[in-house]
Length: 173
Image 1 (tube, helix red, strand yellow):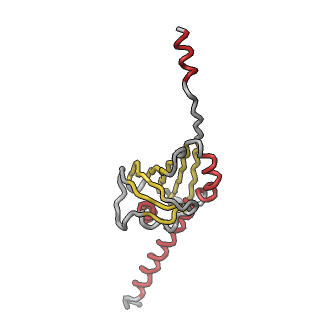
Image 2 (tube, helix red, strand yellow):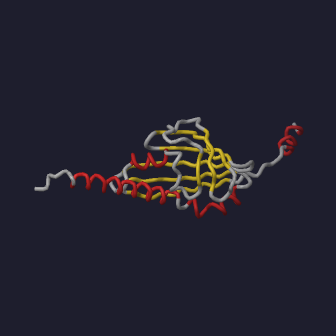
Image 3 (cartoon, one colour):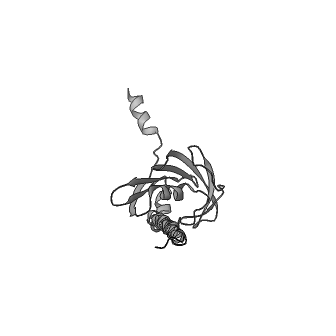
């Protein structure tokens, strides 16, 4: 009996730091346009943390997909693993950068009467998460906002192209 009691204290204790943060914005862009921005893995120009990826244009996002990306803060490549996908609604990815840090990012899109809600959630685990969070917090806070701005500017450009094409049809009465 005493052997069992001591066995529980002999196990090494691992300190796990965990942080969860969710950012939410509302956008006037459509769900489809925002979803296209999220799943276009080759174009991350709107993302404040990523510089580029090795994903080809037109790649369909599906669970199990692994691709590389380069962060703006650190010059070495990281691997991104797509965990779950619900087209038009939800994307969950895991970022594998360095030992001692696990990052899971989720994008969720919801349509409402007021517009389209974009939720960006970050989950950090590991003993390096406090250090990593202190470096990336201000950039992570802007991801959802910059995604909404990029989608809205694209919808404005496509909307202005449609208006100009209607004006040039010659049916001015």
